[in-house]
Length: 250
Length: 166
Image (cartoon, rainbow over the protein chains, first blue to last red):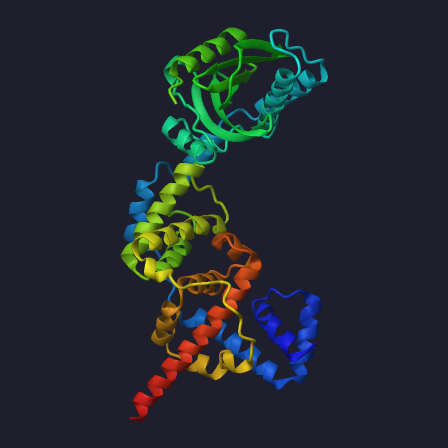
């Protein structure tokens, strides 16, 4: 090892980031080279001096209290709320999903080809999310939280409606990849049924279908196409589709 | 107490160099973390520090653009020579206030990596995540920051000695 090489590695060595093999080589060089040893001691001295003498600014107690009071929910409370769904639900949904995929996919009301492929992607996204117990990346029942979160991550701004008065509780939103593009997914809940609403810019003829156990509804409004999927019954899913169509002011 | 609040505050305080501004920036960052990510659920420290760090730099850009001016990662590296580095003796002798002043005088991008490395004890990988730069950049900023800090410390030590001599 040349002296230049050694000097280059010194910092990583002092920071404990050098792999064992090169550390051994460097130590051999340090043993026989006084200048390298002095440089090493200097770096160690600086690190020790900063750790011992530099100020560490602890958050002032009054500030910490004020901040804790201003955040919406205590973290533990939020965590409890987030995981309040029954434990068996994702597994049950996943099992149903696997069964559904194993069967021949029949989508009578929809055009074959492109639509069938999208429906299959929507279905697998829904099943994957419930399987992982992760229906949303942003957990919130507040449309004014979910919408900006999605808008910030997408090239479009999906309409997000609060339909809790109609019995469809918004639980959050997530991003997914369907039909070769990033799409918004809104997660709603009705009783114990999870409903995913996929939204992306585009046109689609209204249609509904059943993919062995899962109901699918589709419509387009104001340049956005909506795909709803759930194990909820067809009538109630149709209600949600109508409500969303009425409220779809972007 | 919110998780990692002291680390967040320490970083913001060192970058903004002011108690009041640090509080503003940390408050904004924490609220943003809550709003966008549904709360702080014991995420690793670098995750929160990355948000705080971004808030700090956006804040500086708006309120103190001069603090960020004139910094360039592509500056041609002068070949490392041992006389550029810190001397163990000088570092042992430097007093607390002198050292703090010297760190505060570093460009924000150097101060940031040094604080994360020495005061928060983050690894190169974690620092890269917080500052959103490649690990190679973390290493070169650390090296340049340390060399500069050694120069500052040498300069103030010499100035102090001259004063004592007089």
